[in-house]
Image 1 (cartoon, rainbow, N blue to C red):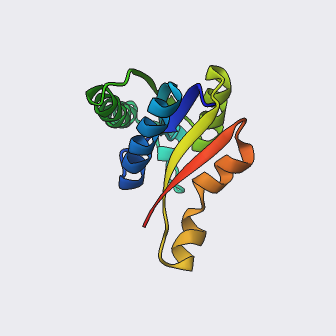
Image 2 (image 1 turned 90 degrees about the vertical axis):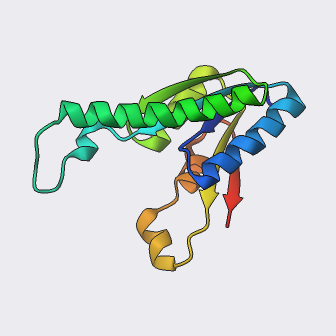
Length: 145
């Protein structure tokens, strides 16, 4: 079944629901769990009007993403699971799929919240949909309303 599960974790409500579902799957299949939090690259912090690379901003962002990841790892640990975790930097789909290949994941778990308006769905795009297209393994999309 699933021996290595990768959870793309962002600390959001859908992410937390995915974490709970991931625990159930891991228990059921005796899987190893890895969590990743994907931070946008430093170039994403530069606006259209230009800008200067800000080392302090990048460090604050790293700390923020590390805190989110540590929260997920702590929740798993509190439930009796041992998991590894890593903060990745870059485009979410690229980094998640690359990491899944690296650890030879059998399943990627990601949370998703349905957006109410068509405009919100169009503007934001769908990470979970793109992940399904590019993933080297099965993808479980955990839906919240």
